[in-house]
Length: 420
Ligand code: CTP
Image 1 (cartoon, rainbow, N blue to C red):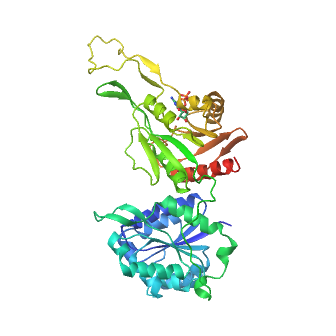
Image 2: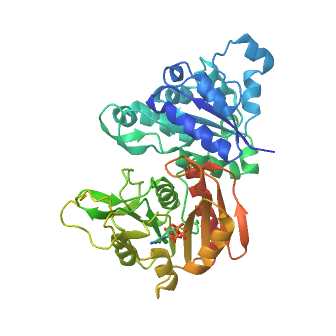
Image 3: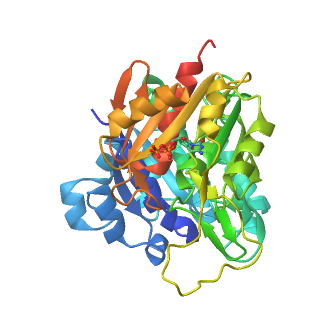
C-alpha cells in the first residue's frame, strides 16, 4: 500500500514550496493529505494544495463537516509520517509547549506517529534564544528537525532560516518512511524514553566522497561578435542531478554551459561557453568515479568565427556559414585512459527513442544512456519521462519532475557502484 504523509503547512513565505513538495511526493507514489494553519492561508490556497494532493484540505478544527467525515485523531492515525513544512517559529513554539489551539497543533499533540519539522523563518527569528530553546526541546521530545538552509531571505537579509529545497525534504521524508517498522513504534512523546535524532549520517551512502562529474546546459558557438549557435536546453536536469549527488555526500564538479540557474549547495561549478571549453573543463576535472553528461552540446561550430559582424550582401545567395563538428565529449571519455568507472550519457530523441539510445550507447562507449523524448516540452520544462538504457536492457520510468529523475538516477548510480 502506498505510504501516506500528513503535511501540515504553517504560515510563511516558504509555504509556496509546500506545493512543489507535494508534487514530488506524489511523483514518488506517496499519498499526501494536507492541513493548513490559518496563517498558511495567507500564502497558499486550499485549492492549489487540494488539486495537487487530490484530496480535501483540512483547516479549521471545528469544521463539523470534516469532523463527521474524519476526526482529527483519525487524520493523524491514517498517516505513516507527519511533516510540518514549512514550520514557522510560531508553530515550533506551540509544538514545544504542547499548545493545541487549532487543527494543526491539535493533531500534533494527539499523534502517535513520527513527526518531521522543517523550519523556515527569518534569520533573526532562527537565532533567537526562544526558537533555539524550542528546537532543543523538540529534538529532545523525539521530533525530527531538519536544519534550514543558508541564503538570501525574502526580507532582504542573508543567513540561516531558508526552507531546504523540496528535493532535500523529499529525501528526508523517504529516509524516515524507509525506517519502516521503527516508524510504527509508539511515538517517544507518548513513552518515557526520549531519543535525539541528528542530521542523517551519509557516510554509509555509496556515493559519499566519490567524485561525480556532471555537464549541463547548452553550449554557445560564436558565429561573429553578436551571433551564436545554441539550443533550447535549460540546464535544469543536469543541475538537479548535480544537486542530488551533492546531497548524498558526493564531491561534485558541474561543468555548466551558459544558463542562469543558481549553483546547488555543495557543488563546484565551472562555467563554460563553447563545446571546446566544455571538453577542456571536463578533461581538467578528471579523474572522476562517475561522469554524467547531461549537456546538450552543440554538434557544430562555425568553422571561422568572424572578427566583425557578418553583413548580408543582398545577393540572395546562401549565407556564407561553414560548420565544423565539435569534439564529442562523451565519446572522448568513453575511450579515455582515465575513463570514469560509470559513464552515463543523455540522449535527446524525437523518434525511435530506444533504438537510437542503444546505438548511441555503443557508439559513444557509455555504460548507460538516459534517453528522453524531446518531441514535447521537455527542453525547458519541469518534467521528464525517460528510458534508462543499460547493458542489461531498458527501464522505462514514469513521467516525473526533473528533480525526481535526478534522485532516482543518483540512487541507481549508488547501487551500481556498490562494492566497486
Ligand atoms: N555529447 C557530448 N559532446 C558532443 C555531443 C553530445 O558529450 N559534442 C553528449 C551529450 O552530453 C549527451 C550525449 O552525448 O550525453 C548524446 O547527445 P545527443 O545530442 O543526443 O547525441 P548526438 O551525438 O548529437 O547524436 P545525434 O545528433 O545523432 O542524436
